[in-house]
Length: 245
Image (tube, rainbow, N blue to C red):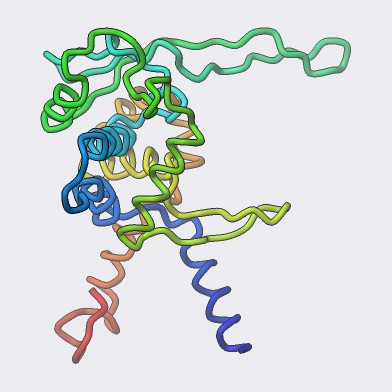
């Protein structure tokens, strides 16, 4: 029993903060394609919507709150871009009479981008619809952030990548796969592939300073590959049997 508890604590501490890998994100993006036998028209529509939601969260780096406020006219199908008209604002504070006072919230519209395959999915999903929210619920209303989190969690569980990586002070579970984690992974994986960090920070809607302080922890895959490639105990040619790769 003590061994089990110790192992669980160690696993949670290792998983926490590592971020999602490319393979995990790809598996999550493809998860909605696993349709039930004799799927109904509604199930086909729902799985299509879910795949779009997951792919856009991973591919555009947009915050889920920003993505869910996008309307159909904000999508440019020619250039595969989305205009974020309701971005998260930056609060400006000023010290007045020794107290920190909120002065205003500054926000700036920006463009985010998606791939050609997502464009084809969007065209099928919209079925000619020209207005209204881009991502809607089964009742035709704008999808809420809570519903979006449930969608991502459901598919993460279905492909076996959802994990509890910690708990908050009030005991709530902290999970590995969330909309925020998916957005962060998309930006991080783009950076690792050689993208300009200033550009990806601008597209994601934050500063490079924020990226350096908050996103720095995320190169789990690259760090692991470097160590396994160069450490004398882990080099593939010097090991026997299972290498752990």
